[in-house]
Image 1 (cartoon, rainbow, N blue to C red):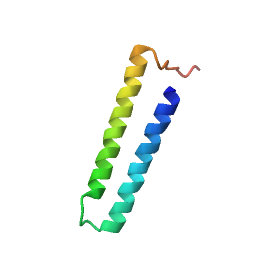
Image 2 (cartoon, rainbow, N blue to C red):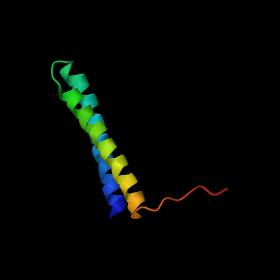
Image 3 (cartoon, rainbow, N blue to C red):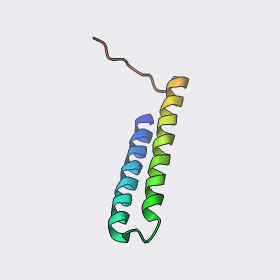
Image 4 (cartoon, rainbow, N blue to C red):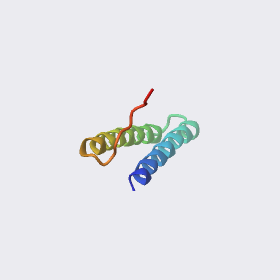
Length: 68
């Protein structure tokens, strides 16, 4: 379940990144759709990072180190 949530967030982040690129090409700076899409992308990225940190703090996500 946790992997599905993380992958879902990554898909939404990539969608908003693509939407920002599309709006930038189509609108030519006449609307705020590019800014809104990129703002949503940043917000989703921050939420994802916070969820991963929270998951590690509560033990839901167990980090593994690189062992030499």
